[in-house]
Image 1 (cartoon, one colour):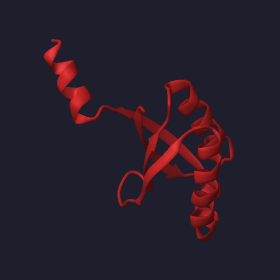
Image 2 (cartoon, rainbow, N blue to C red; image 1 turned 120 degrees about the horizontal axis):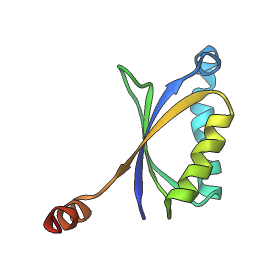
Image 3 (cartoon, helix red, strand yellow; image 1 turned 135 degrees about the horizontal axis):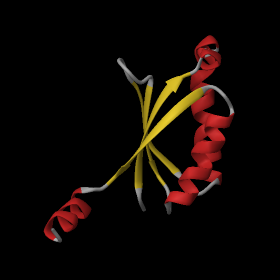
Length: 96
């Protein structure tokens, strides 16, 4: 399954209700699972982004629907990096 690294920043709404953020992560896991995605890891981070999530999804469209639904709630803005594991990386490089 493809892997995506989601970089999240709390919006003004999200930071105002930061005490509820752990519950929002739990709800996000359930919603993403229902959409066919899997949260592998969630990290609270210091610096430019507030949270980093590693998520698996069967394809880009499934992931896009899930992350757009998340963003529509207004608590976070997201930036996504599509990640390639080492075997995929080596295959891509070998084809150059």
